[in-house]
Length: 74
Image: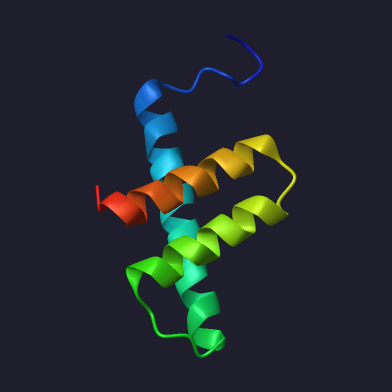
């Protein structure tokens, strides 16, 4: 592709997984700081709230996917 855009599919999937893990971890940390009991619903609610707050469409998609992953567990 040129211009340094020749990343392979595996690397993109790894990056996506890392972003999702980071968002889930960040949600857990925010819940801990807020004194909220950590459970699946609280994590999903936190991710969905952040999704509504961000403006970047790609970030919204990652947050949606993160919430879905937590909801379904896979």
